[in-house]
Length: 306
Image 1 (tube, helix red, strand yellow):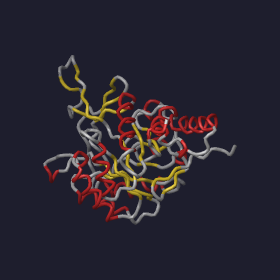
Image 2: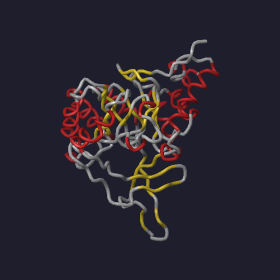
Image 3: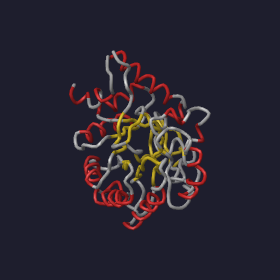
Image 4: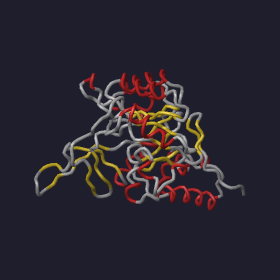
């Protein structure tokens, strides 16, 4: 039997394996270089980049919860010029596609970042974080309204011919409606899911633990919800899906792939054990050998057929 191939395709982009870092958890690569060689990943998804530096939310902004964690970082980032001057030179020498996560408070801000970075050949694509509040519409998140989600996707699509990924919020009634809207607006790939809105209370202080009061829940606690949303979305769209939420092992990754994901992203797992990505890659290969599978495409969506 031939050696199994872990290669997957996201639009026109070919990845050597399907494992990516979830945006916001890997920084810009430098933070994890003593644990994970950037060349290990199928692609590197950076922390969010806005047109100008964002300082993020007040402290405390992270707390552990049963089966996961809450964060209210507030998308702290150095802005597009800071990214170009500090992060991009570090990432440039590695032979791994770079996907820049974009954040913004208006459609124009998303377009500004994509336009500014579009000229860099080493950047393979963009991931739109549409969980940001649209300030022109009173603060409603782009990702909770199909029309707003489609509008920002279409505007960025017009600004770049690079791979365009849209990261979907789970804090909606029907995620497939948003998925279909952004697919129709030009998205090449979907990332799902972003964090679930949650809260924790300090019972001694009698107040919320996070200074922001609410934050995004991630980790193993959300995996069943995320797998369900990947399953539902796979049946409604024709473009690839990147599944994420609580992946700590190859078995977790395989659940997403069999639900319909083409690739997977590891986020909170990096804080549990920074060597998990390598373990997931090795585990996927071992499973394929044991099962006589030569390509991941044979496993994609298998649970629908089974």
